[in-house]
Length: 247
Image (cartoon, rainbow, N blue to C red):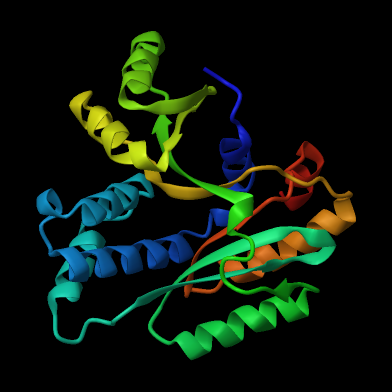
């Protein structure tokens, strides 16, 4: 299967921007803590925690770090994080959807607003841009030479809408409502995704010239550097020229 390559292309080509391991670990630890606080410390009985642990392993987070985060969630001094989102436009009409986990909403609002203002963007009201993105399940799996033909058949049966294969990875995309069935099928097959979750995929992308695109990505980088921000989604087309310029 092929065709829906928007997410994997964006994710793969912006990988260099996400290479700051400490930032990645901070975001994953937050997800582990909120998952454990909400659903308990047993990953077998807590799907959200199980997924967070899976993503931690995929990011090569040490086991001790994972266990400390779970124990911290059970303690009386554990931070209380709330989930919040922001929507707005970067320069040249590029849509941005920002997902946060924060223990201080005022701080987060101020930081997000400052980032948009500094880089020529504008914040909108919640819900104003959500129609530009589809929420889909994305599974990134290391391509280890298993039978792709059999794998594709199993994934299609589980509800996968697209499977993209390259030299290093296999990316499975499914509708949000099929996320659980695809996840269970991977478990039945003994395959553990390096990263899995519900992502916001742009319905269409917008191409800009290099200078304008780099200005948008400076806003995206500023937001991603904030520890309160878990994910930043946008509908900027990631061209080869832009990917090379970003290094």
